[in-house]
Image (cartoon, rainbow, N blue to C red; front, side, top):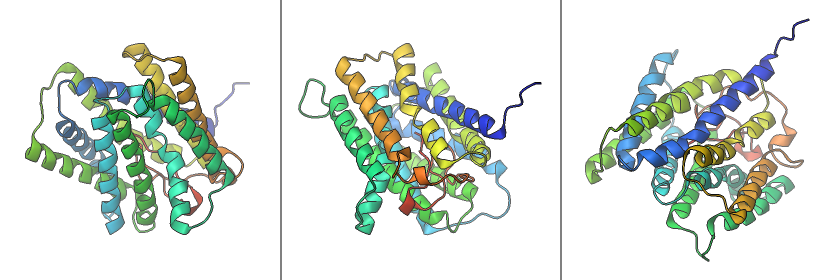
Length: 316
C-alpha cells in the first residue's frame, strides 16, 4: 500500500524549506552589500515584496496603530541586521538574530513583573554563554557588527509583542503589508537623505530576487497555509534550524571559518533557542493547538498571546 504523506508532514516540510531559504539570505545579503548600500537594498527588497503580496489580499484592508509600531520595530531589526552584516559573519548574524526567541518571554516577564518560566531561564542562560563564546573571540569586547545584530534581535522581540496587540484587530495579510510597507517607506526616505552606493550587479540582483520573493512574499503565503496543519512547538523547532542553515551555507559558499570556540558558542545559542521554545515549562511546550495563519508572513511572528509566548520566529 502506497504511503500518502499527511498534511502535517507536508506542512512541516514546507516550513523547513522556507527556513532553509531564510538561512541562505544572510550570506547573500552579506555579499550584496559590497555593491549596494544598506538602505537602497532594503528599499528595493521590500518594494518588490509588497508589490508581490498586495494582489493576494482579499476583502477589506484593516489598520491599527500597533501595526505601525510593529513596522517601526521591524525596520529597526532589518536595518540593524543589514548594517551588522558589514562587520560580522553571516553565521554569527544568524545565531544572534535567533536570540529574539529567547528575548520575547524575558521582555514579557519584565513587563508583567512575573518571574519567567524555567524553560525560558534555561534557554536564556545557554544562549548568554553561547553568545559570549560566539562574539568574544580573541577580545573582551564584542565587535560592532555583533552588537548591531544583537540590537536587531531586541527590535524583533519588541516587534513580536506589537504584532500580538495588532493581531487582535487586523487580518494577517493587512498586518504584514503594513509592516513591510513601513520598512519600504523608511528605507526610501533614508536612502534619499543619506544616499548610499547603488550598483545593480549580478549578486545584488540575485540577493534582491531571493530575499524579496522566496524569502518574504512567497514564504508568507507558504506559512499562511502550512501553519494551519501543525503546532507552535513543531514550528518553533523547524524555525530554530535557521541559524544552522545560515552557518552551513556560509561555510560552503562563503568564507566562514569555525574555530572550536565558535562552534561551541553556536551550539549553545542553538540549544538556548530550542530550550526557550519547547522545553517543559517553556511557553510553547504546553500548547499543542495548530498555530493558525501567521500575522507577519515571511519571518514575522504568528498571532497569539505574547504573554504565553505563542508565536513563531521571524526571519530577516
